[in-house]
Length: 334
Image (cartoon, rainbow, N blue to C red; front, side, top):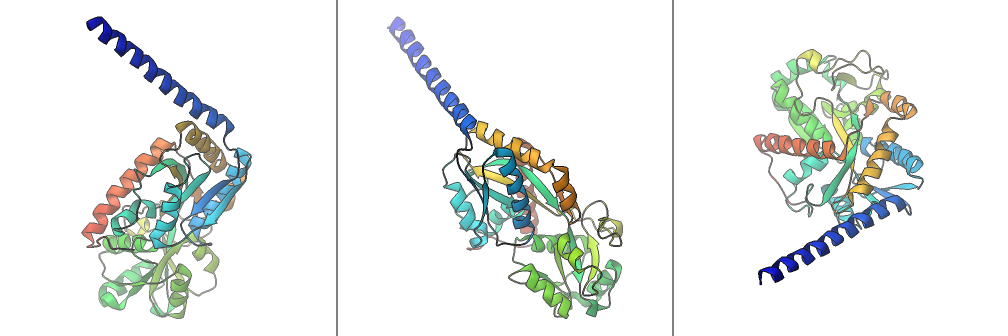
């Protein structure tokens, strides 16, 4: 009996070993053939704005480095849920990816029926970029500097209104972080888009809004808004007269560098394919021409390993969960 048991265990071990080797070899073979057709990069937001713009730049680089077209497809809606569910349920072969930003780590804390889990349903491919944000204020406030704005906000409370594009979106996270750091209590006003909120700032209907630096750069010199501050550790070359929040003693903890962007794949995507995607992404963000072009708009191309990006998402998920709970923001159906 003992000899039979030992022999059986030996046979089973051999079978399991062969199975593992076959799966490993199959994954390696898939990686050598990848990509075999066009790749779809799904963006969970509408066209325009940093997530879409960055995704298109990255897609162009990936197309060049992988030898197959990478098609950007916008699928906005349901607090990124429509895009996320589509990618999570796509074939895990590397041909369907999702462009993500800071909301990827935030939305699960505010949407109770998102339908996907950022860790169980996706596999990180890598970080692609970071984008600084600016605070735009209405000239009607007669507060040309951040110090003036803060004094006014402390004196007027909710008479000062800061626009945003919905709970958990980047302008909202920037505003929440700023309010906490500055010790003020303005009224937060939701809009459908940053453009709509910005137009209301220009018209003097609301006091201010946080937007990507590219918007501020486009408005600079037109006297339509006052650009009060920029996230990050140094001033932008394209906005040399705009101080960082750090210069004014405002520590935007959790949002120091603005928003971040990256790519994820369906959870079961083989590691060799993820490695090939990551290598192409790293090569893309090292392109000096792309770097210089985006730097002027306050966008810094940045790379990471899949493991580093995964750890970073975990850190952001934990931080924003604690921050939103402290602010009394609870999950709601979307």
